[in-house]
Length: 98
Image: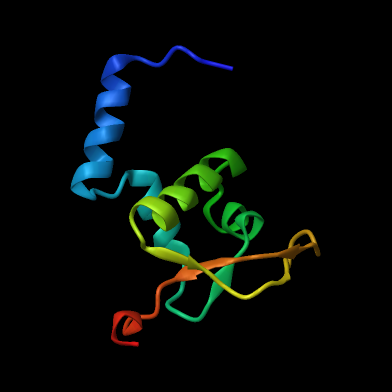
């Protein structure tokens, strides 16, 4: 399925990816996350930020895959849903040394 997206939106999205600038929503998500080793499910982040899950999911994926700000943690049960999940967490501050 394709949706109509304004060319200006696409251009801004690609600029943000290239220059590494964090968006307002990405900053909101990082602001509620405690330092390593605290980890979070998407539903826990939804609860902490008050943002809809679709916004949280997209921004978490950008922070993890595109910007390298987050990493996956070990599997555990989500405190909101009880399901087994692979949470995300901030990277270890000295992670590049190991």
